[in-house]
Image 1 (cartoon, one colour):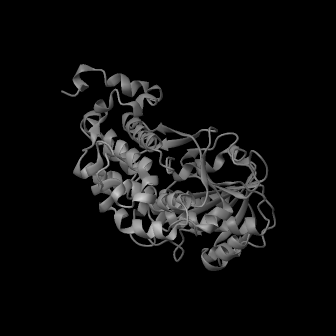
Image 2: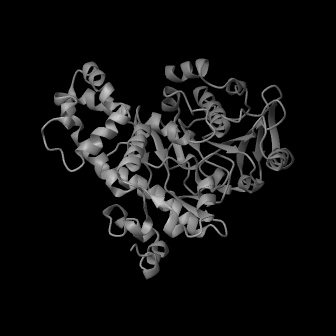
Image 3: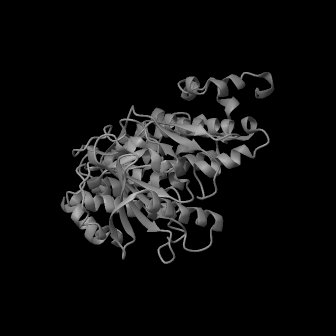
Length: 426
């Protein structure tokens, strides 16, 4: 717990220190950022399953600019909470209020980040909103107000399934984080766009699994949970307007294992949105606006995963051979040149000597390599290969690819369309 104590003293958001006198104790906790969301998500009875549960809802908006109608709707959400839930505790200075949702049977701690003077910097956005909520949860766990040692993270556009809290348990775990299985429920007009985008997510993770990457897991902010201690160890959510889930899991994977849960399945709304720079909403809008999405929406070329696999399999050779493990006379496969240039582009060859010099054993060296060649470096490696050697492909060009064979059963309508003659690649 010293790690948590240090985090709370040095790195946690100041508002997290304002919750030490809550009049209630809780079994589990979930953090939900909310910007421009309807109030219906507050009426989910599954939030009450498994004990006295706390939902920390960070009602937030950007401090400058932004959609004024979205801001007005977010203000209305905070007003809805005030009018429809029973207040138990209030701290005026911090803008924190504890309620009981008597209709659904759970507790709600609202964090006012939408009133004038409390809004969030635009560039820090949802990342800061999640960090505020998670930091509050860490403080409550540290002080024994929350019994569980795991923090669930989700969004306002999901359907919380039965068994949501029980899936990760209350006690300390050897896992740094968890990812929940998911499916999307597309809004009208987004069916095809949703199938293509969700397929792209699963295809990418399948490619990482094939390659043997330790970062082969989904990074969706609405479908994750994490150990409070591991969260503190990596200094919390990055304060970013998008991608905060990706970067948090990237850090967590360096301090412990990420467990992919088999159940329960979280249902996420599939809707177009421009609230964040990238992610599900902007991607769906982009795909839906394509004249022919099946012929236009692109996926990584399978060969980039072949290159990644070959490199990761050869990592042990760098312990003895150094840089010559790739550029020496040995035959390291079909893609030696491509891999070598990709590694140089991301700086691996520059840090290799340092990684070898600091390691006392092959095992230490390999761990250091995997920590350096993380999810972000993996993505840069793949993007270099895509830009220089292996252009992206449309979905029809993935027919027969072993990476997608296990995904076809999940998208029968999508794959049935690929066998129409007019979609075949000539």
